[in-house]
Length: 361
Image (cartoon, rainbow, N blue to C red):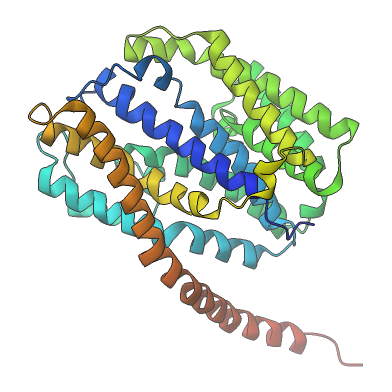
């Protein structure tokens, strides 16, 4: 069952990305940090909650990454993540850099050195500013991948539920008594979403149990508590008011929907294929933010606001598809084959060495 495709995940990914796009385009860019000169008040009252789409991404990631890692192969996991992340990232980072050089000033700027470090996808770990602010979530994801890789390296991925329970216990403890380095290592600010998503995968693949439902319930409590506690900071930064009940309700709906997915209770949404929408999600997320703001700053107010807003959104979707079709699809298979060949070359001498070290009988 773990080889089956979960169709609803593609749809949820796209909806999460779209929520983030609306958050940036109609609220975040104009509300703070002087990123966009163009207001779009028509959607702002609801779109300002679109940042929660990233939390849904993290929950989906927990589901999908445990599914990917379930076969127990660290090598296969590492190669699949590299192939999934880097081709589109290189294309989108390059596009954002070139647009920044062309039309970014005075609000946006970038240097060659900054671009080169960004292309490693490790800029957030070495203190180099990101070419696009949306990359922050990638650095959170990479820390999650590292935790999964550690479990794979010690050969304990089949005991994932035990690790999820321990991770949740530590997350709650660190919320009550913060320890900076441990919080960073255990991704405590967003761990509840990863833990819940991974547990939903266990429910999907193995069925519900008291322990799994308990993990989801405590994760929901931790996620909503943390998210609502962050509202005050958001209100101050964006000079707006946020409704805690609405934010909590949106987060709760994520858990409800993912539970329905895990239990196979999504009806027609689970039977339909949403592969195209799913394929747009990652490049759309990487491309839309800074490029969109720069387009707004260039065209507003000389062109009608609605034309600029919706035209930029459509253009972002078109370019996201172009990245998928012209970059991801043709590059991913040969890249995967090359990495596997490289891994074989490294592995073969190690195997010969270990065999020669075995005692003769």
